[in-house]
Length: 405
Ligand code: SAH
Ligand code: TMP
Ligand code: ZN
Image 1 (cartoon, rainbow, N blue to C red):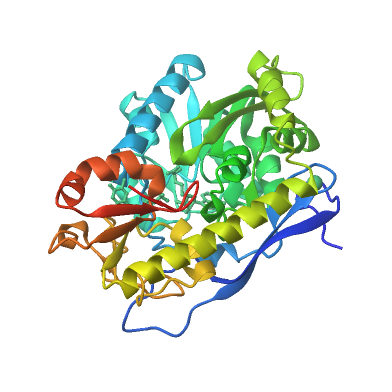
Image 2 (cartoon, rainbow, N blue to C red; image 1 turned 30 degrees about the vertical axis):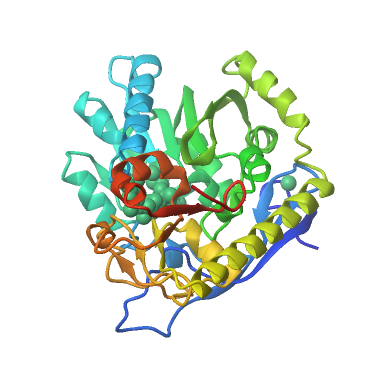
């Protein structure tokens, strides 16, 4: 029987996407052939309800020194983290010499404002090239995986942290017990561990099935995070819904008994109970919706291609690895995908090998249709590429269902 990585309870399998590549492993066209595949399958714990993957991809295969994702590619996300930094500075980092640690600091999108405010800080991220970008902004980074031993070393060198922050990273870490032991070792007695991640409730409600890929090992809900915090001697004292990435939640965790939970925690928990996130039927419905989206999307792409239209992709997201590989969308249907990340350009998407090109080439000339893989950045991208739509081009979206705009 499969055991829950958080509580040891029995895990029931509910989704199977089959063989999938490592979502960040964009392929050098000169060196194809050596890709790592794994089975992407998901289950939920019948005890603590945590939704989790059944096969763990080794962390060094995903978060390599040359990991290509750069957080600061989105101005909307930059603004979001600017506000987050401001909030932390105003509420938690107010003592005489506060210290903030970020797990998964990437290119410094959040820490840059903490650094500019002159607050002691440290980013921890194994992606060395992203860390170089952060360092160039004056941010201190340790190029390492955060785990218990890293936390102890940081504590010995810098003293306790008033805030340990993390965005879109804690859910990526299968060895969650080591993370919480690390937080326990590093956090000041009244400090807070604040992390935000995509929300399971939104993923199921809107059929965001592409949020499931190797890196997203856990899909958090408020209930499962509360149980997880309790499991490791902490308590969930804050929960805030966020509009980013299709719907996320910011969790505030403190040592058990140290802080009184905000009323929003109970309110959001009550609302969440109606979603049935611990029930098998919920996942059966989700699986049926996913199959329908796959069938609809494939039918649409095939029809448009048969009519002679050129279709491209927009945003070589890691999410799109699941869409393309699960649905079987290769260069025959989507001839290229445009993406602003220099590290992805000139490469092929994982598994299905669609060439990634710079957005400057999107309009030379415009295709008839563009499949918006980066749907979570729709507003920003559609504004930027207004001319595509004005010259007759159409966007294809596949969430919450397949439609053309
Ligand atoms: N916080 C940024 C980056 C998210 S991408 C944002 O929200 O946009 C996830 C990042 O976590 C990557 O840069 C990856 O290298 C890093 N990461 C993965 N596992 C980690 C670990 N155990 N400790 C620290 N960073 C980790
Ligand atoms: P994400 O959904 O995981 O944040 O990835 C978004 C991808 O889309 C990333 O590879 C960068 C790319 N992108 C663009 O190409 N243009 C844009 O305007 C934005 C916001 C993102
Ligand atoms: Zn469990």
